[in-house]
Image (cartoon, rainbow, N blue to C red; front, side, top):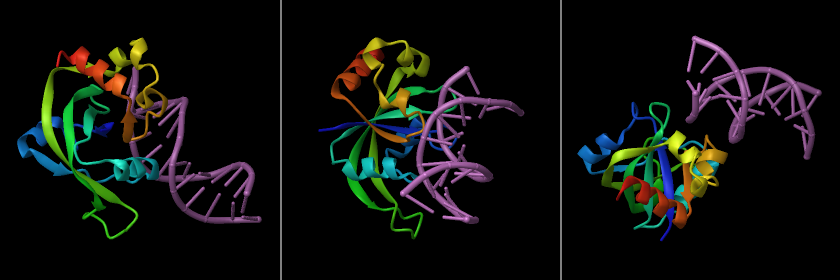
Length: 135
DNA sequence: GCCAACGTTGGC
DNA sequence: GCCAACGTTGGC
């Protein structure tokens, strides 16, 4: 079981959209490091859902229900998608400023590699964020 | 294979 | 809207 963080601009695809649709394929990743992370995802892995740009922060949780396959939105075989399903939306999101000032989260890729759109999260970090969310 | 130029992402 | 960070492209 691994933990991940997947980013999306809420204007492009928000946690509310995922909640309404229940499940989606995570497309549009055009970065090799992010793609490699998606290829490493296994069914049952947990993803923190992160909103970027507008009120940046972790807003909820999704889980991997289908492992990497060819991105149907392109013919370029370099790119893949995974299937993710809605799990929950936090009552209060964990904001980026909150993450930045939290010593337990200081080593997150989110802070070091701010542009990586799919990144791995350590178990302790995942559990710490769940604690902050009161979940 | 190096590196400058350029484009994109994302925080503020 | 601006700008820093960083990935990619292309000339040499």
